[in-house]
Length: 298
Image (cartoon, rainbow, N blue to C red; front, side):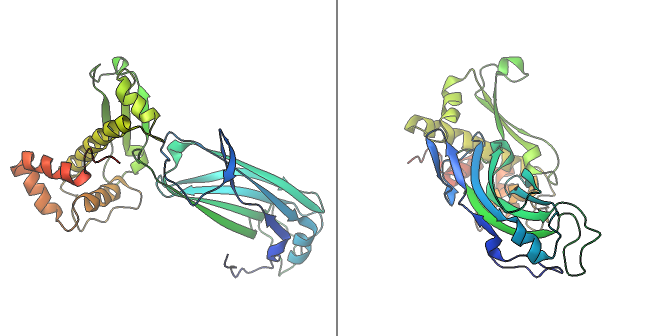
């Protein structure tokens, strides 16, 4: 980890000793891998790590009084959802060496993309009596480290829910429905929702098994992904603001659509694809089938 240059004294790296993050699974704990290839938005994460802090040395090396309260916190950020937040926050007021177990539970619906886990030791509250070279503001970072986890998988990379379509305005026997709301400037996570009809047991079961799909499940998922891609691309093409030179905010629906378009139609212009979709929708549908590699299951 690169040490940041801060306008106050910070302790040496060895005042904090950390164990690796562990992934808690139904079969036990395992070292957190670099990536979870079978992850999907229905998969919540339970993580744990042990951290030891030499509080006396940390305070002394920062020039803080022995009674200064510190906080050890875990903070998460997910690039796929553009969400972040505190996972755990523990106030440390004692002396000596403190051994702390951080336990983090994250909802799969809040995640996606690259998950960053920051562990930080900060000053708990403002110190008006601090020396000029010592940290004085609440939240001043004394120590930190960051761990990355790439979340990737065969499941759709947007939120989903399994519901009974008979209780909605959707046809009772439809298998799924991709709901798109908001403008292209809206956040992707708040604009897309895949609804799966629980009455269609074949489709519902395929999504239940998305983490470890059977061959039959992969065929169903492939059909859903192809249909979702078609709906998203057609939705984007209907909007005249969707163009190569568009500058959508990171994490927005427009940025997601541009990324999907580049993935499906590399080297082709949005103008050409829009013209093909309008003039020859049947050919466009076949092009899209080829682009998403429908039913090419491994």
